Image (cartoon, rainbow over the protein chains, first blue to last red):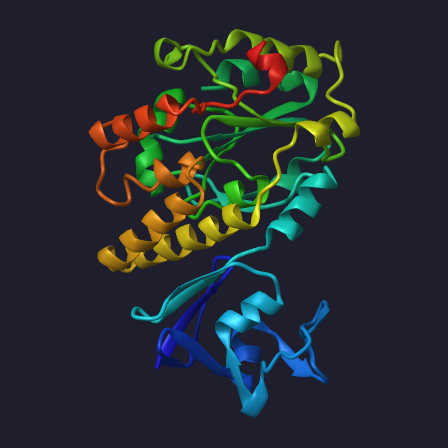
Length: 135
Length: 204
């Protein structure tokens, strides 16, 4: 089936087999969807490498279980096998490290007119960053 | 909102950046048009900001200095006293603190103090945000029942996160000011847990 994989808000589709609530990807699908490849018991993308835990069978027979990929990368995975969609978030450790550095995490979001604004483009000013909502 | 503060201090190298955690731009539009802000008001339908800054309710404000460093972490800052009768929190004290900081009369917190006052996300918080992210996508694609499962799961994982529990209500067709919200709030506060969590010097 065609599976929707949302990687920190970026939406991609990938061929996958879903059985008993588990989602299995090929090596090609894993690379295309998430940018990770397995070499010598190590998962790597452009930026970093993560060794597989001892005894891991990830990638055996060219099959990658999405839940195991997320666990190996220490990333939260929300999965709806019935709907064929999953969301891969960011780990608490990564977020805590960034916040603990005290460098304000950067982001780009649109205004009402759809015009994008990037936080770091206001650097040089003192800023009050406020989250609010109509609710 | 924060228009008066922004106008008062804009010539002092200061800017307010407001981010609406709303279902769509249309939900936020009437509020923004009424406030006619001269500062940027951004729309965050997918909760990018709560994920990056571990924000769990609104309003939440941080101070960021000229070098892009957080010098005061997440605090409760109301722009007006519109909801004071409900929240029991006055806007005057935190706004006066912002003014004094911008005018250079006081400094923000030192790094060690800032870190000591930060609340960092747990694995459960981040799992809840992933569930919210999936639910929001499912809802946007007309999968209401599936979305509901993941919104509920997200709220169970992070019951203190009202950007999830209350913020999802408009997406789910629930009135965020209505009986379901009031019941949720009463259960939460009745258990001795605060709905707003201001920093000690704002609270004190």
